[in-house]
Length: 247
Image (cartoon, rainbow, N blue to C red):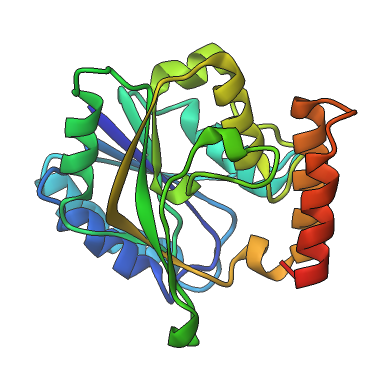
């Protein structure tokens, strides 16, 4: 059973593409859960227009308003809210401006059924920018690179629900880098990983992480130092290199 989660807020300009990509899957999810942060631009109307189409295909379709809690970062809080509800053995997080290739869920499902019984599967992600000359592909790498950088693309990563049950949910102190912290926790816990080098997910650049570079650098440094140890020089050097290059 596959569960998909999309969190959204004023996503009317892009969410139809996201929804269409899920409907066009050769293997559709069993449930699709949305958490909306208070959209006022027609996002909710679009979701309700798609609801009967998904339900006709046998996909459980649910939309819930985000519960705001003071001191909690909005994105991981919304993920956690959805994760408390979904029932699938495999869970994917799809951003409201990203979209899947048609074979994505089928290939991911087959990877989870492979002989090594992975608990996480990461697929390559095509990164799209308004300036098409800057497009690039994020291919999953080794978790050994964690002190330096995020080695796997979170939008292309699917987890067994049992991983969340075992390790807990996303840390809501981190506005941008909660996914980096979660992958660190997975690595330290020995979660079994499988990589697919084929592009299965498309990500539209320009979101919170892309427009708040200084905060992203600060959070990734704090997370890497927390997990690798205070005396490991690599997180500090990685922060310096990012600051020097504007990343």
